[in-house]
Amino acid sequence: MSQPILTLETDPAIEGLWIAIETARAQSYPLTGAVFRLHQPSTDPRDALDAAARELDFQPLGQHWIEVPRRIAIKIATNLIAHDLAYPDEVVPQAQAADLAGRVLALLGPQARYFTNGAVSGDFAIYDIQGNEVVGWRSLSDAPLDHGLFAIDDQRVVVLWAEDAP
Image: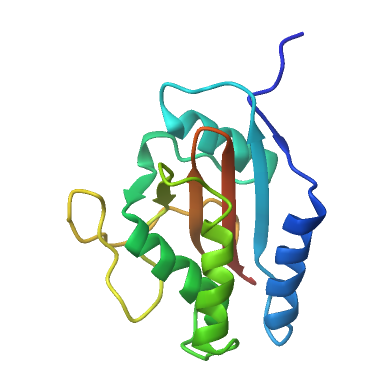
C-alpha cells in the first residue's frame, strides 16, 4: 500500500495556536485549522490542496482554487479571525487577529503559495496573483457561506477555514 500524500500534524505548538484562535473567537463560531505534513511532492499544488480538503470532509476545488499573493493571504486570514463571515461584527480585535494570522502563515516557508475559494466577506478586495479582482466564490462545505485559506510549501499544507452556520 502506498504512503498517503499527506497526514495531519499533531504538534502541541500547532495545537496551541488553534486553541489560541478558538479562545479569541469564543463569542463566535469556531474556525477549522489544520496543518498537514506532505509526504510526496506534487507537480500541481492543487492536488495536495484537494487531498487536504478531502481529509477535512470538504469538497475539493481542483482547478478552481484561486491563487493569491501573500499580502492578500494575510488579509484573508486576519479577516477570518477578526470577523464573522455574514456580518461585519468584530469578534477579535484587529491587532490580535493580525498577530494570530501572522502565526498561522509563519508555519510555512518563504516559498509558500496561497489559495482561496473566492471573495466572500471583508472590507478589502481580493486579487489573484495576476492582479485580477476576484468576485464570487465556490463553496467547499454545506454551509451557506464558507471562506478561507489553504497554503502550501514543500513540506506542509496549512488550512484556516470559516463556515457560517446554517
